Image (cartoon, rainbow, N blue to C red; front, side):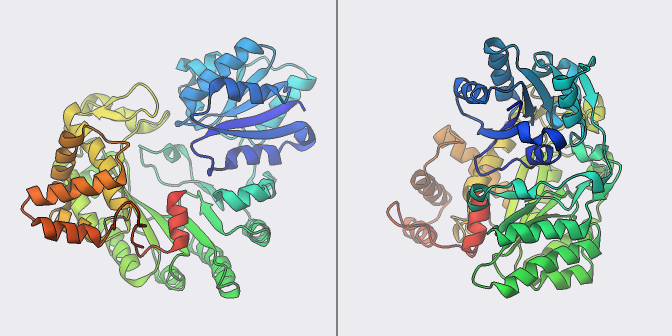
Length: 490
């Protein structure tokens, strides 16, 4: 075996689609190529030992924002104990601003951008000559029809135990400056018939959980309808063994034909990730985000009231020009639309993104270490930004967990952001913790907070009991079906 493809995934349940694309497109080198995934948090020595057990000549690492620090340690140790092993890097984290990165300095070769064609070519040159003279190789983007689809490389174990990532297209036509897709010229679709044939094969092998990573699933409505019809056909043919599909949706583009298709899905079969990011028109203009806010709000309301889709809607705090007050206004507007989850994100400076052009004017200060979270800006100082970070963490624990379905509306009242911020500040002051808060303790703290705000103890206990019945009893089922619960836990 000559070539090992590897990466450190955030969780075991996350199967690397990128590595499988590389393996599928290795051509004559595929027989001497293997794939081995690891999980962040594993011991560096054990990862290096397992890599070397393959006796590889070349190791290709997929580098992302969540694994760059641990991958740097792995590669540093690997080059110490086996300096003869050639290390090739690829992935979004090392495709931009690479000259300043330690992980690039200690590696042998780097491929920036698309690797489907360039990685196997580089490996062939390393193994058979002539030896490449340049360290950095710009990835060649081939015609989409020339890329071999990788879905047969998902193993039976992957299908049984992991999230299967799929894509009907790559790229994005929008230019939101906080996103790496801002650098794309457009979106490039794969041949739909070939793609659906691969989905058919996965389904026949037992796959039921499909997560689409397309940035703009509903960009081409005809394609969207055909893909949704594929899943509707499976649901109709196998109502007792349903599929579950996750799509990223453009919020202000939901024509009637798409609504009609969405309305046909039953509970527990469909999830949408919807990026609002900000409801502030001035901020949207500043970061080149084109969005009709009224249409977006109307569409979210329609999805809530007229469909069974589970909705995960994103907001980003810390964008240039966004004050706490304007963010709170947007948060309250979104909460009033009643999505199932609000993902409260904190701005990160992804390498290569155009957001850095606002650094001086808006005083953007980012953590120098991954994931490069914003620490302060002109409108939000460090201490206030930390309050927002804690808000986001507690929101996940209380609101997005689904464990406080009846209690949450009482806790939030008529101004969701302001009331939850007050609770967040109180919880931190009384626990000094944002992680490792046991559920029983969290329930007790919520009850104590409600009482300190004037609620009778018996009333607070009864309210919490309607959501949670104690440490020896399972949490009361929320409206999210079991298949949704499985997806949300992934």
